[in-house]
Image 1 (cartoon, rainbow, N blue to C red):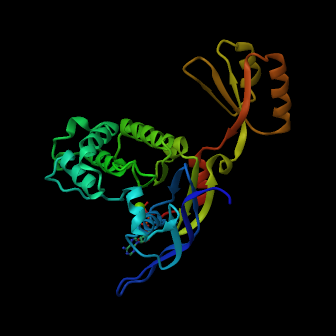
Image 2: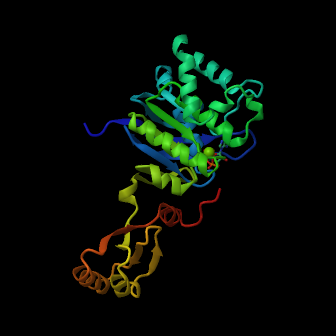
Image 3: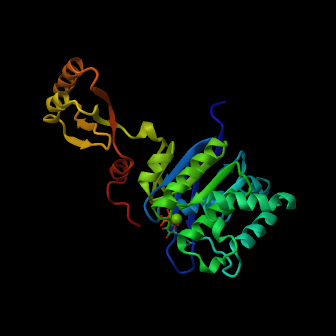
Length: 311
Ligand SMILES: Nc1ncnc2c1ncn2[C@@H]1O[C@H](COP(=O)(O)OP(=O)(O)OP(=O)(O)O)[C@@H](O)[C@H]1O
Ligand SMILES: [Mg+2]
């Protein structure tokens, strides 16, 4: 019963033990559920345990205790590997291969039938805007270009689930925009996406769920729209409604003018303001549109971590 999950962890813990060095409790009883069809942002400061979790999910390292399932199977089940697209945190590519040659090797490893291979490779290169560089050597690529090849490799097999460790790292604003489009495109095709990132504005734009981790412990998880609390009231004043604007601008805590000439005013949630807003909307019903204003993910993140998030 309940929703279908593509990733489930149950009290997952990881202690790194190294000879003559103190143990590191990298992950402490992590329990999360990633619903099918979601775009899930996995957040937390450096050293929080994100990569450790992802490595356990991909069975690259073993958990010290607890368990994880991926697409309904134990994370160590090899059968499930072909259904997952994975971008590791520091992918290593052979520099002497061209982008095409590299993806062709990946396609063979993924057992994509030979008659489909070239087509698939061209499609993913197109998706990550790297078609022009298909015959260029990977050794000549910039960091952002490598990241694009990493994403191309992850979506090559039309996976049911994408697990990406900091896919936005090294991308320029165009690259980030394109990445967001790729992810939303994958979601539209029914793919679930789980990725770690430090770029909170991008996470806020495309994720429907998040979890925040700090020092190996989960601080919160859930639907982003439920986690970000309504922090005030927002009014949009249609362009050229100076009377309405004049009436409200003096009681607003923040104002901004948008390109179309409309204004966005933010108010606190006091009763006094509520009454004034009601009066104004009655007076200028065509000009004013009221809605709840939510705190930004970045504000939420700092509030949850409380500034002591560093390693
Ligand atoms: N192989 C390892 N041996 C010992 N300690 C490790 C190892 N890998 C990670 N750690 C430690 O585990 C903790 C979690 O690291 P992890 O790489 O999972 O963090 P992260 O959330 O991915 O951070 P970042 O945002 O910097 O990528 C850190 O304290 C780190 O030093
Ligand atoms: Mg990491």
